[in-house]
Length: 470
Ligand code: GLN
Image (cartoon, rainbow, N blue to C red; front, top):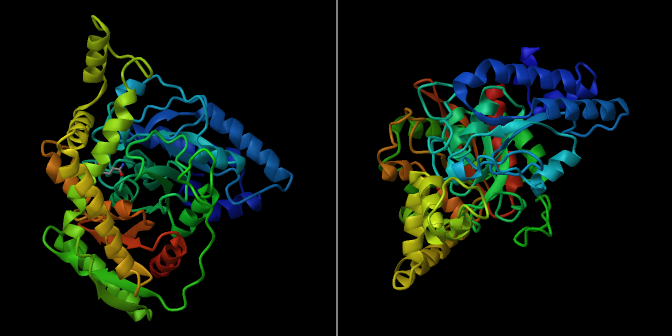
């Protein structure tokens, strides 16, 4: 049955519907893959084999009665900063090592209603801060395509689990690239939806004006299926909105930002992306150069806004309200000891950075200025989208790097996010999809669309994906 684990959601659904296999058999097949592979990869932090098999049996009962929907009985994995009621939720942090979710995230609830099977919770950089999964307080995750390399981050566990056929799909969260960059590093599809299209209720907050939950899958069709089951207005998240499908595109107009092909981009990645552009041109797409002039400021802007919001969001982790990792002589000392021992180095760096940029005297110079730059970045995209339907470029400037290669130099780690952060700052949807390999390692292509036009992404991505199916 190991072949089953390689299939897409669409194919699995057809098999379940035709009763070629049951959800129980499918779940067992995935659990077997996890048992075989995960000791080397380390994608999971918590496994839920018993409840998964119960959910599978329930799905089988429904299927028997003919109550089958696209996701019924499909096994998935959930990033460990998204809550599943009654299951441990660590966010990759010591602070939450024993924290049990008191309620379901809205996305979890929606998947439950569709009859999905939950196999387990996946590893991440602590509080989703990082680009390599090495900042997890528990263990690093390895890239299934090359175990000496990182899977990307922060949703590295989810990406590795999908790439290694340990689940049919996974959920990740993306604040500055955490769905797209690991998808690119592991050779899978990752969608960051438009800000507001998916509820953030039950997602442990990193930077609330940037965070979005999204699917990590084996095909763009699957990404669409999962996205459609997640999206929608939720009264528990006041930034969420109801969205509709946008119209089909007759002729696809693709914009290639000239700023995305400068210094710092691996020439091999550039070659793959240029080939993809040539392919689209041959397919009759209209290709034009666009300019996103404030691209150079995106990283600086992101690394002020995200840490500022994080410093506020993480104030609640004081050893009293959540977790307890140390004792103290008095209240101040208790806070001090807990925050010293509870947070890892990268999280502390962000809290210090964010506290500084929000402090009186620096607020105007850094935080307020970054908000203005954010508006300029948003306007760059609005202008570009006056004449194109999607923007195409690389997802990451570099190939999956070696474990330990960038841990001593946080700035070089931040540079890995250069193409992804502006999308979050502008609130736009973007997808990373496999675009060939270089030195045997996956290359990812990023497509960006106007707000709420995820459809443009699915349509454009599918054309490229079909090229590789034939
Ligand atoms: N790598 C980026 C960071 O460290 C993005 C993380 C994310 O999207 N959660 O902030």
